[in-house]
Image 1 (cartoon, helix red, strand yellow):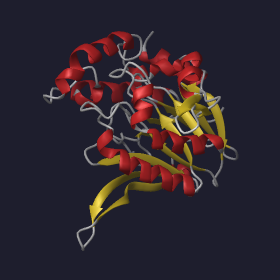
Image 2 (image 1 turned 30 degrees about the vertical axis):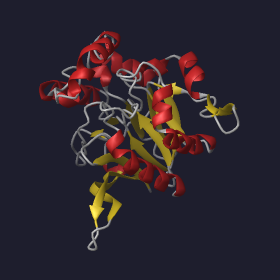
Image 3 (image 1 turned 120 degrees about the vertical axis):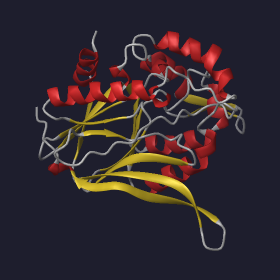
Length: 300
């Protein structure tokens, strides 16, 4: 199966959600939430991420995670990840309880493709205070892709992780997971990068982006938002509408894409220093906002 066929299948099987100019979405991906060990790249940014997510919840945004939210290559089970970042999962629960949580799996959390795995690990958690099981993300469903369709213009936004553009990270993810657990995770402490990741392999990153762009052109310039490569992308109207929300494991910052008032923006959350020397977490606008209507329409 080629990258075109894999992306076609993801589009065909995608969950469809309607949106309008009053809808508000925040797209993050590649959090790689780990167990708070030396290999947990997310740990350095967890306070930034938590603050940003709390802001979006209070402002009425829906949260869509575009794959690789949990690091389930380096970690054998979800439990230590939950224990390390419990406050974040309880915040995600608030989104879920208000029907504002939409999850897409990537190659590092491909196990969420199995509904039984999701049910066993994410539906409930053990609450020590009550010494009983409590609801967490009860009835949560993961998807390979999501299509947002505007209720008036019928314009579509295709959301998927982007690993479909690579054979090994799609079909060979179990082998890559084995290599990460056995070889690359221990070597991370020495600063040796994992070559299976396009985020750390520039040549592979370029190939992935080119394959996705060719698919977009072949599909009537369909607006597409991915993650996977960790490289933020925000095209100008008239260019190939390939967006990438970046990642939540940049050094001392996280990036994402906002959709609000029919406009799309690339944003960054980071730690900044006030004049008095105290630190604060701030939102920085990197690109946009641009009206979605300025990009080519994709209709049914």
